Length: 397
Image (tube, rainbow, N blue to C red; front, top):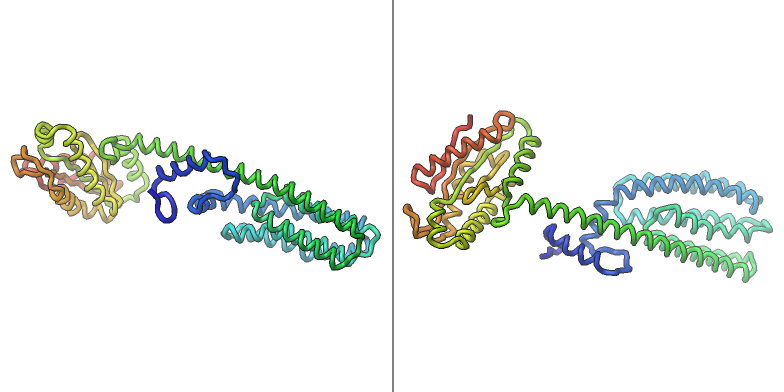
């Protein structure tokens, strides 16, 4: 089942991912819900990688001042000024922006601005230079697209818009200046298109493989989580089993602050053997499932942990404010069971299914699980002895 934003549960997510992984999809985009998860899982690390890439690109970029000395010596001062006073500071500023929590669209715009800014510097020098070798200098535009598209790990859409904007700026500059022969200008554009297309294809393939690797890794994680959940779940009722209870107990006594309230509610179905004998085991199973579902719906808002403790016996663990109201919650659970109105002709007290409850509470750091369980078990015995369908409170040692 899906919500408006995507699959509602991990098993549905896993099914969707299995379907996506099985398709030979050449596109790069995920469905919206998965794109959001992909960004949440990888966005922060990717921003750090991109910031480091921009820093390295700034170093490589400034090495190309050698080309200005050799090809456009008449504008080397302009080139150096643009390098050190404009473009490099802007690149370092953009690198710092990646370390802030910008969204994926803003990050791609900022990332794509780096190669475009470098290309604008090259075109600016081209416009003002009167060197005889200035036409050769213009090849740096294609070289910039090639080097940045391969060295910076831009996402495909960022590289695509930057490459397209650079090509538009190159054509506009050539048309406006008409400084070089048409044949050379056409060759400049052709070289750029070839370099841009080849590197963009490589970037698309790289990003596609990265996304597929993420998809496969997420599928594996969810499979492991599903297997763990199944191992910790009672097959009949869907609530936790003893193994799941052990994990919950360790978590509560490890993570809950000392002095925090903790409570245990132990309850079982009254005269369940008689119910099974009278109606059969399939009906008994259905009865337990109904009681587990009712108890789970009551406990879920209070973050209570529900376990099928054995046969017809259930155990609920509560912490915090819910633990302080454990006796009242047990009374609500008792009424929930009666409200199911499951016929039980073999009941000596009443003709519908009921349950008895034992409650014990204490404080983390002052009492352990075993002591709490013993107190709740004694209280449950007292509730049974008092006529069943009752809630009794025990005293924890």
